Length: 310
Image (spheres, rainbow, N blue to C red):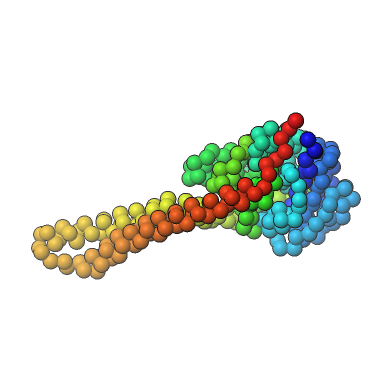
């Protein structure tokens, strides 16, 4: 069996303090792997340092990690893909085990679940927020996930080439996770080491800004991937509000034979009709979703699985 080609994709923005070690560690972990560093408008010499360390440097001028991943997944050709952040917080020595697990399945997605090797690796609030997003997405899509915001993953070719990559910024991890759930690809989780950024290096994550973007994306993905749940819930809430508003109107009508609260009666009817309309939209979009998922599945099946281990 021929040796599979492996490509590591490293999104970078001003990581001059970390990128040399990241490239060196990746090459030491998997010597025959090609390392692609995608520079996202750095101004600190990241590109030059990465090239000197032996990486293939490419540039994506549209700001945002999602834009980098979208470009790299389209351009890079390989049998197995590695996605890892360029800030030297993930331990590259775990990579051979992740690749071996992908090939053993064969699986399409190996998620690197972060295990802190220092007590300050997570920024305050990030661990709690991550657990909250894990619970929310796992509950809604019916599959448990331990670290949906991890930036350390291994993919098969068929996952990468069937992934739409619509996100622009740090919410790309959420899109990757939900895509794997909605397509029900075979996947596994593997614990990986996670440590502090190099001294003097600053995280590009903005806790509240990016947290709200991720939450917004989750809501959008629920609307697209679970339309019956989303519109059914909205419809049920509207119908309940309409019924509650109608109760005093009916009581008064039975007591007096009159509808004195005519505006309330109209508002109540409006809420009930809105609820029924929302439920109908959910049913229609659920049928559209089935067709879209069938198309996505066929697109996914066009590509071969990851080469299995001997």
